[in-house]
Length: 364
Image (cartoon, rainbow, N blue to C red; front, side, top):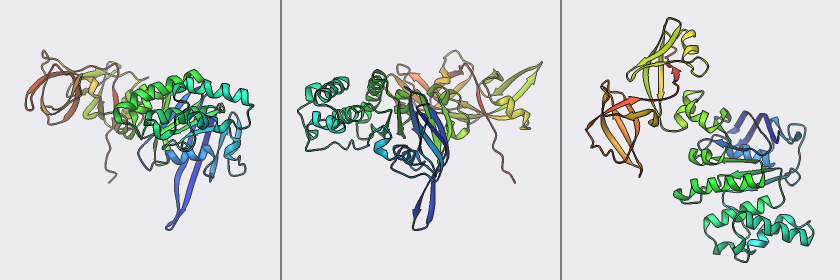
């Protein structure tokens, strides 16, 4: 494994005492893979990145890079000896150096001819070769990001770490640049780990994403599975938009299905969680997760829902709909279906699988 983090714990001293930020963090990243730690502010993702870089000591667990222990309670490798490149949130370019000299900063021990070749290669890789003589203040935010990436890649690090790399960019640029950055890293065959709070950036860039909650990873999985197969209700709430409808599990003739307001749907034990929930004594009561793309606008459907909110998204409307029971759900509808607030439209459910969660009961 290029990176292996095992049962990591990091805590900090505060005026109120020692506070745990990371507790039991564990994941692995294969060579050439792009991973992401995704979570809200305060979940510990940036602390984890800084611990991997060597900027924070660890209180428990260990970090391995290419099989070598670089951090544990008994071992410590200095940041400059870990072979890790870092792209900081503010890019941290040297304002008094031009683009070429910024990229050359990590190549001071390399022979001059080899250094020039490497600078030219990195600038070409990130599309900044025509700007080699410019200074950071003469560049846009996206261009500064590319220079910071070229500088981090120039020494050919075993692992590249990116701390909220798109947070200083305009929202409409972020997803496009995330995909471009993914292409650059794949071309360079670089193993990378980024941290972000933005799921769209994570999904656009990463091969595998870890949703962090309370200092540990709740689910480490492919983006598609995080969205369509969330392992917990908390992951489902954080990743993507969705609604939860009450349903009931029924088993008949050896087959299981979920009955809820939108109809009856088959359950497949290998992909859905409802069977396990029922066997745990939940009496068949479940919550069914519906993503906006699971709900189809169908004028011929017998089930109708009232439009109570709408958001125009260019190619689509995001409708908030109220069902006859009073339950609300979201639906993505092509924008040429422009329905008014208060109008009732036909809908149906269409998904390849059902995602369910047990009903949370008051322990009292």
